[in-house]
Image (tube, rainbow, N blue to C red):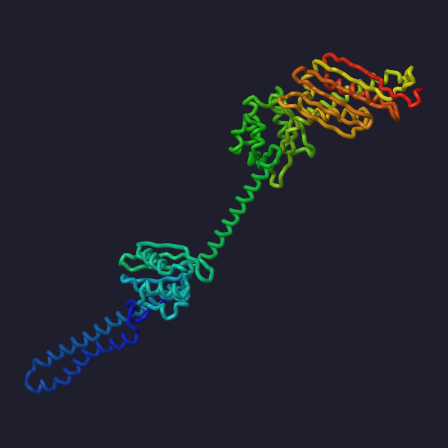
Length: 502
């Protein structure tokens, strides 16, 4: 604890001084007693017998007073010795505190401070001494660059700091020049003096900074995860180990609008499906809803490696992928595969129609091509069909579906496509499409407003007889459109030899 004589706190007198004072005070009665003893013979010779008695009494009183003073001063010395030991212990404790402590008197002058405070402000040098005002010390610290926050605005910063210093209580966190952080606290005492102390809180600040950095990273990771699952072209859901819904995306809410309001409240899976059933969903499950829940819970505990397809609302179909996480949760991805299912059903119908057409063709005898009477010979078969009352599921206005249908039928018939062009007219006005064949062509035109379709198939027989393939192609397309009735025409295309003969 550092002080200077001009502003030091009251100190008890040192032990040698008290010892000398004790002897000096006690010697006064002894000197008086010695004088009385020296005067007794003279008094006796003067014929005054009463005086020796008085002198004896005075001597006894002086001796008693000396003894009393000696005892009293001994007690004082004992008390002061204890006080010195207590103050020395207080000083050691004060200096041993792991924080810088300073006391300012009522005139805002530095009254005392401990070693930690002195070490903290060692760069102040001789400026750090008792008796200096707070403002003087503050100016010295700023001038020596000990306050990074004041750089560039020194006078304004000093004015603000002096104002806060004058308040009843003050506390702030300050970064020191060495990069460490200290918590500075000032508290006004009852006598008007001020206690100031600062604590090194660098480790705490570093931990808080680390926690804040981790929080920012977690927020960023959460935002990236949210963006990622929102970008998925599928419904996403994440359940924790207790089967509570933690995360979901907008695709899931759009897929199940009846229960979209539940998906932000961390419901359990069973709560979700029961609420969905109560809202009119999951009707495809059937009557044994409880049995379905039990079976699904077993399947969720041990998800299958292969995805499963199940019906959904509005006649749609959903492919469900489920996988357990390392923490015991469950990730579910739901993909709407209604178009694929529909195309699969359509392909099944086409294959059935093609099988029927092939069966019909197989029943027909392959007749050789007869030369024409005029010397021409058949070089191809041109087939047309006018279809009326076509089925509701036929691709009447969807150019992509019609293109797929035609390409599949061409491939199934054994013909070779070399080009294609399909055009959809606006306002569901129908589709016109052409597939160029190595053997010739296929042309289709639809009239959705009349449920009508025209088909034109031509296959030449330059290198081989393609008549059966042409008939198979027409039969497959006719079966796909499922007309109520059809008008068919067949033309044998011929070429005439250069010499006019066969």
